[in-house]
Length: 414
Image 1 (cartoon, rainbow, N blue to C red):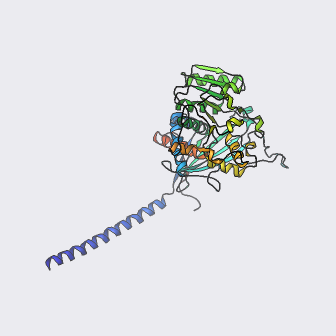
Image 2: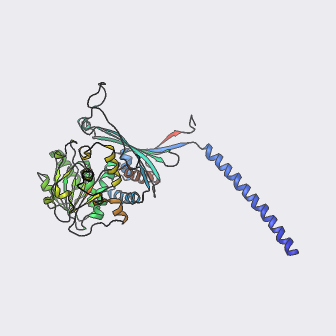
């Protein structure tokens, strides 16, 4: 009986204590919820282009690592972009050839006003949107062809975390993708780069090639004018003095022949694939890796079954193909869109296409031997901006870079 009374008393005491603890937890949680609901202040940071440089936007090896992590998440499906299939490049404003409004912009070469939103999971857990403004006539004003800004947001509340200059952000994330491809698909002893177009994209692509293939010591370049060539060579000798053999070539055949790594980073009119710079199979050496982030056409040998065809994201090209008129290669000049047209016309099976994310994740093999020729289409995706922007934002916070701005202390409407 005594033991029974003690057990009973202990049980009652335990029930009372447990109830008290539950009440205290509920009270604390309610108090915390009230405090959190009253804390409506939202601050974010503004990062100018000099701030972005301080935060490491030009650190290409780190950018290649970040893009590789992002591609693994793409393969898992832990991401979202715009469009019904969550793979869209973005939403672009288009202008008519003829308009009754004299102030409306004309659809001139590379005229782009577009928003590129995305969410990325994994270690990133952020979302954001890049605003892309582009006009080739900007160069006549001493401005870059494109002027870009990026907003990084909290994925739960949607509140801004950072508003940042995005020209370098975009250039380096685009250039880093060929480096990810080269890390998995180029020969380990690659030494010679063939480059068409020594502009901004050419610089960042070469930087990523060298990050992936440190034995590079030779580059062959074709550009439009002496000014761009001189600027590129000055940059190259300062940043990569190990590239001691620099050759200026007169035609694209010489760019390709004998090169281990090939990239076309040119700009030009879109619409007629016969005017796009070509790659012929007979020019390409065994074992070459070609990464193409710009307009390009391929002969039948390069389009045929003897060449591996890798896309940075098959979903991206599928979305593009659904969105643009046909043939799609007339509107989006990337080799990946030529492949989509060939699939539609029954000239290629979709199974011939390989996805870079699957290669990075190990679900598809990388380079199989030293002789296979591999070409990769590089389209660019807003998830890349989100990944690199998140890394730079975290660095900026840790190192107190940028200007803190206040959105509001208490919103006027809620």
